[in-house]
Image 1: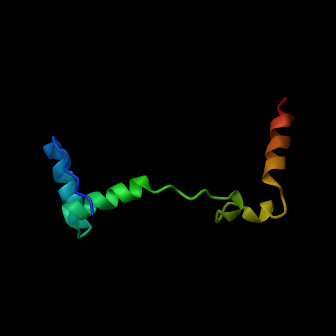
Image 2: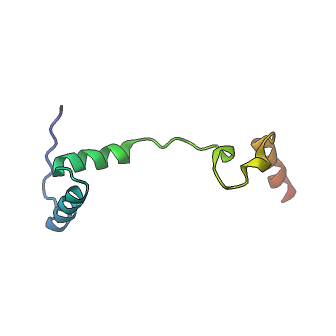
Length: 76
């Protein structure tokens, strides 16, 4: 495992980090690793049909690309 040293971290930021780590029941080092892992994880793209509660049943069998092109051409 690699070691990361952070220099000149403002005291206020360190106190917030320490409080967050305590709330999450982690050490400060574990909390930093968790924050970095979360921040650096690529989000999975969502399909409009996969979204819940947004009328996905209206999109079944509809080609979204064609629909968007029709919508855009209607404004021309």
